Amino acid sequence: MLLTRITGPRDLDRLTPEELDRLAAEIRSFLVDAVSKTGGHLGPNLGVVELTIALHRVFESPRDKVLLDTGHQSYVHKLLTGRQDFSKLKSKGGLSGYPSRAESEHDVIENSHASTVLGWAEGLAKANELLGKQDHVVAVIGDGALTGGMAWEALNNIAAAKNRPLVIVVNDNERSYGPTIGGLANHLATLRTTDGYERFLARGKDLLERTPVVGRPLYETLHGAKKGLKDFITPQGMFEDLGLKYVGPINGHDIEALESALQRAKRFGGPVIVHCLTEKGRGYQPALQDEADRFHAVGKIHPDTGLPISASGADWTSVFGEEMVKLGEEREDIVAITAAMLHPVGLTEFAKRFPERVYDVGIAEQHAAVSAAGLATGGLHPVFAVYATFLNRAFDQVLMDVALHKCGVTFVLDRAGITGT
Image (spheres, rainbow, N blue to C red):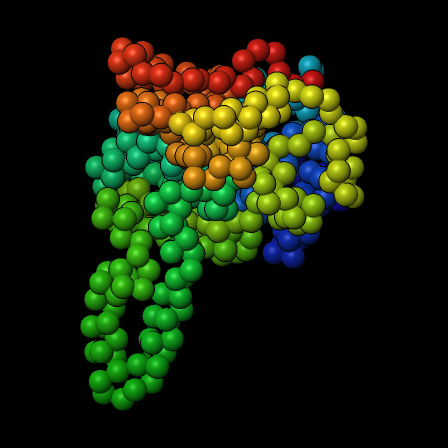
């Protein structure tokens, strides 16, 4: 097996394109087999296999800093940096389910919440600049994490430094846990469906260069109008208007295309966004058929079918979900809020029964709390269901906007104690 020969990122340099494709297939088989025995984040990692291989071929970790937002998609990164014993994944004495500084010098961020990676990257890039280092910083952020306000606060600062090198990889799989929602998701969807710009320009160049006399000058004029044409064909102006160079969309499962895009971004002397299109759960049919979250996180499953090995008993999340439906039938003023976690917090059935009374705000807990205050002031009773640790972000809003104004809001904190197996 090729995978067993990979003890560090530089071992990838010796592989041919055909061997890299074989390695990607071996990694997917390994992940399905290993994670089905222990449970863990399967879908996200199946989606970033080629992207992670390309990142480690182009950048030289640990000298270059490869940062993974949230880190639940770090399993492939672990495999390529010499950690291939997944027998005790997420258990005592085994590998962490997230990057871990204690495990490897290749791990930078241990276990931050979503949307923070751009802030980390911006700080590291500033440090490199001040200390005169030539190291590269590359931040991988999922499209779902771009619904978090922190990401845009960082982008605002990143864009202000036109000559400070920083590579931002947007891993666009249209999902966080479930499908990504909101205006940004719609914008990225537009980019995904209008990726014909480069092909259009290339065909135009070939045609015009074969046209005597006027062809070449006309092409130069066309190329000079590239910005306006690009905005017409691919509305990526949102990024470019911020002052960020945009590369993409790139097929996130084409290693050669990924390497080419990342090499260009690496050579650019300022902030660059590389937009990669990936498929969550790629290569594993049970995950692809799971519309809820593409096997974002699974317990112990049968690797062939994806079905749980043992039936689980009742849990607090399902009890809460059942009660929400009952209360919703009794009271028309009850509405539910989720921060990109509709299924994990138990609101699936409520959403099916009362779709117009559920608000998914994306990974934006601060906004969720303030929006809840507005809903309450407007005459409704909002129920914000959120993982306990994610509410850390909204303490200020709970105090200053909900409590100070005496707004009737119910906060339901899932995972508020010892969790997992």
